[in-house]
Amino acid sequence: MRSAAAVHARRALARAASALLPAARSDGLRILTYHRVNDSHPTDRLTVPSAAFRAQMQAIAARGRGVVRLHGAVEAMRRPGNSPAGLVAVTFDDGYRDNFTEALPILEESRIAATFFVATGLIGSGHTIARYRDCCSGDGMLDWAQVREMRGRGHDIGGHGRHHRELGLLSPADADAEVEGCALDIEAHTGERPRLFCYPRGSETPGARQIVARHGFQAACTVYPGCNPRGGPLLALRRTEISGDDDLRDFELKLQGGYDAWHLLLQALRRGRLRRPR
Image (cartoon, rainbow, N blue to C red; front, side, top):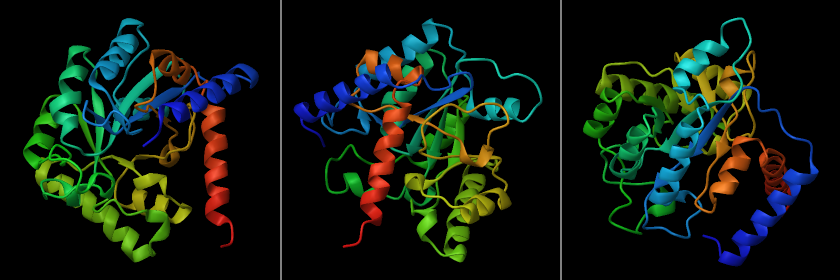
């Protein structure tokens, strides 16, 4: 949760960085990261208000940016040839109920198909991610009937681990169980083996990538910012996080790569804090 002053300061710094630093590459696939869409958490960075989300989807649909399904974009990236410029894919992490009740109708208004990465052990469980535990009655997760309906309406379902555990911190055996269990759960409840994965909290290692590939996932998303050119590593796709703080100008800047350098800097600072001796 952030104060209004912190939001304005962050926005000013990020916009200044976008004006001073060289423009990031924007000639590949830009994958947008969302978590939640609702009006119940106005100060939560991971929750985008419904009106803002509608404006964002209308903006990319109206400008003909080439909004594509992530799976189709990954297939195109595997083939030789030039990548069309400015492709955008929309993804959601974790599997919150408001993805179905709030985000789905807005996506379909703009005829946009998204990929929903679900932590399968939480789907239909009555539990939620720790961030929203003991908060609000509306903070629950999807159930499997909703997941199947989303898939039936043309959206993709991807894996996000079984219990949202950070793969980079787990033993190989535990990481394998998280990834395999997630794939088996989705296949059992939808009838289709998932081909797309997203590392929970972006935590991954070369070993984790190998595990993800071994269980049949063709591509996997990280939290590293930027575009994805043809020929880039499919098991380390870059994404652009859209937050509840973003206005439409921020959104446009993010589509153009204006926040990529800022996000890389923040991630480097966070990693430095985590590694600092205590």
